Amino acid sequence: MKFINIGFGNMVASDRVVTIVSPDSAPIKRLMQDAKDAGRVIDVSCGRRTRSVIITDSEHVIFSAIQAETIANRLDDSEGAEDIEAVED
Image 1 (tube, rainbow, N blue to C red):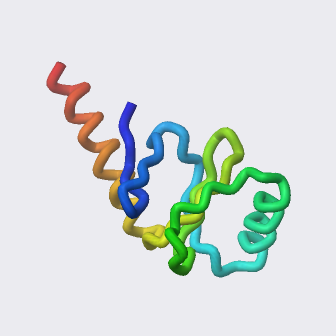
Image 2: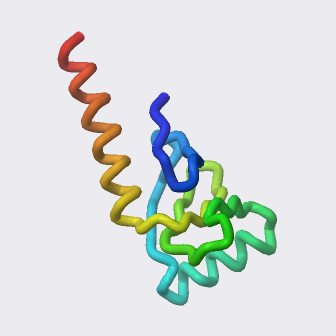
């Protein structure tokens, strides 16, 4: 199982991530509010502005202060390392 750093020493399992989005659009803002109301939010922004929203396969919604593009690059890097390991074996 590979983990991705999503800011401030917090990690998420890469195979559980469904999508990483910016919190700027109205539908995502509604999704964020609905998740708060349902108690499915994990806020790891440490009081900073939320710059990305990570949705997991368990329908948890994670708020991070790291840009969505940065997290996506980290996800790509971790998957690339996994593919290389599989080829070497």
